[in-house]
Image (tube, helix red, strand yellow):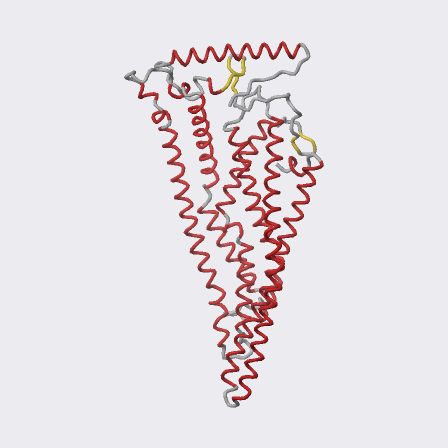
Amino acid sequence: MLREFFWSDWYTTGVAWCGFVVVVGYAFFLAVVKAQLNDFYARFYDLLQKGGEVEQSSGEVSGEVGVSYQEYREQVYAELWSFAMIVAPLVSATPACKWVRASWAFMWRAALMRAYLVSWDTQCEPVEGASQRLHEDTQRFAGGVEGCIIALLDAVFTLCVFSPILLQLGTEVSSPVDLGGITTGWLWIFAFMASLCGLSGAAILGQKLVDLEVSNQKVEALLRKDLVLLETTPAVIVGTRNSSDERHAAFLPQTYFRNTLESLQTNYFLLFKHFGVLNFWLSLFDQIMVIAPYALAAPLIFASDPAKRITLGTLVKMSNSFEKVFSSLSVISENWGAINDFRSTYRRLREFEDKIYPPVTTGGWRLPRASIGSTMQLTEIRPRNGVCEGAEYSDGAYGYDTTDGGAERAASTSAAQSVDTSASASASASASAGASPEYEIRV
């Protein structure tokens, strides 16, 4: 899935690497802006705390109160202006970078689809749900790239920027308990242990989500395929008997799709149950970690020992830094559902590549096939009696009961086979004459 985009023709490769540079650069820029905002919050809340002290200490000289408050108001305006200067580049750069990121993910999907179509051999049986893997799974892959990978890059750069800040704050904020020789890095260690606890809980409670997602996508692919057949060739689904037949109800669409819909409902409710348990754990743990830094450091504002006492700005800066480091370390647990969805999509696309790509490898990379002809048949085909026939005409492919109403479907199947045989013979004759074979395109 990397070679099709990053090592393809010159245009696709250029788009891939240029887009990657933009995505990485924006993630680094966002982390730097977060650090600047963190420093702003520390200065701003310290200024607000000093304003309260002025009101108490300067009450004796009324003439100086207005002057002092005027100076503080000017400082507040100056800090607000600095905030505007910090976020102004972010406001202007974010829409452009998000557009580039979305376009980059779509170009990756388009590169995958082109490579898969080139390598699709219409004369061999495709993998289960091939059309869904080519269409929907590539779309889900692009969404996963734009979501999971971007979140991972943001977490890495945020961790690199905020870890030194949190380590420095560990020397300014005293630990509530005696940790022995650990004096500077106790806040970072606490954030790491908390994220590890959250990840362990998410991994245990969400361990079945990948297999459930894969099973659910298989049922969705089967349902979509049968619905297309119901729309284009309804005789394959409901047979050709007249509606007045007393056994016609056995071939109604609602009867045919009953088992598929029941399987779909079972799969979805299993997903809902496991997602519910996972979301409960993540929500509970997130709320605990919101209050944790304040529970650790807020009492130090009123510490009796002046050496341990901290300001409101230091508390806010420590809380923000702790939250950024903790969120970066726990990015996997917080996005466990999306990561599992991306993993299931990756697994299905990898199975698809194993099926359509040749086993020959060069430097560890599987190479796509060259073009297979001037036109391609994009429907799934299955070998039957030495002839590749359309799966939509196979009476045994979908578990039909050929004992009732089977004569009509058998006749239809035989006719389709003769047509396919004639088309195959014509294609062979054209090939022997030096012409490129053409295949019938079925939808």
